[in-house]
Image 1 (cartoon, rainbow, N blue to C red):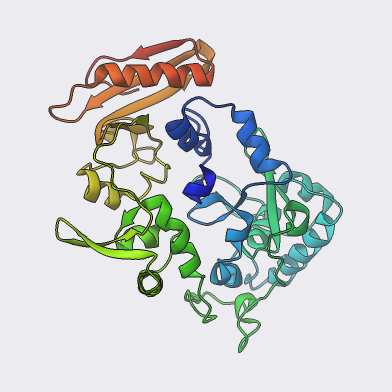
Image 2 (spheres, rainbow, N blue to C red):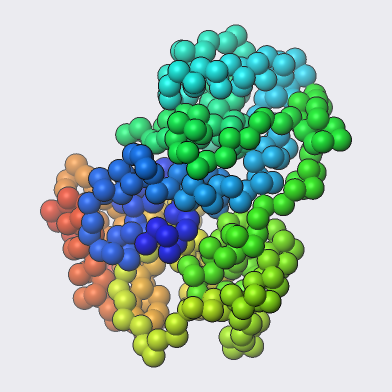
Length: 378
């Protein structure tokens, strides 16, 4: 299943469970989460974490395709361009690489192992106060200089050298700018550095080739969004894969699209699943509006008094349609899975929804399912 999807998004929200567990449940039904943990966090890992969509698990070989993403880590100022402390921040980055040769660690642990005197950041718009050590590690992670070897129970990244995480991971030298301006990314100044400044591109042909079997059919936007590629780069990749015969141009109700050459067109689809907001079928909202006529938005970031359907809303797939929105919350201290079901107009699939909720509850180790009256949200 992981090979078929090629990317599984990670998110810290666990109203139900951590998001990367859910696509496998939606497609396979109940499975041992410990088995997925071992496949992702124990050698030989089938997947590693990188900024492949948002934070996501991908095959180690896939990380090689993100040439531009790694090389242009410096267009964001993690602290290396600070007029007063930038040089000390760069020294901290280099010291962390040396320390990680001795063994992996979280940002919290590495802050003790590599002390520094840099002033900490002001709180960001979430109210968090990220440490300078964390920022330096995130810069190194984006650059591919180090990797994430796992997550703690508190969902903190465990950082490690790339070679210690998986032998197939790239381990590039850390660059601070472009070939013509090697200090661009560490030169103090408020000016914005534009994406694409290196002239490099991610390997869009390889990435669209991975997205093809997962999507089956898609527009330029669908293929671009799967790995967050620029649309112009994606169009060139689609053209190359059309010429090779791997993609075939088609029309879907007048919309220009491309079909993966091995994608089948069944006469009927029989499927029932609750889909997480970060599921690869769901994370491109424009795509599900196009294919299913289903207008969906995640409401995690919507103020509570403005939510229409709830906090953690899972689309409900039944046969060939998305037929309901199900606001779901695991109330662990009560052993209860609480749900509010919002049917699409004209739909009546309550029995199928409740069966899926019972299966989800059992998989989560919860003994009860509580379905709220119509019109309520969890």
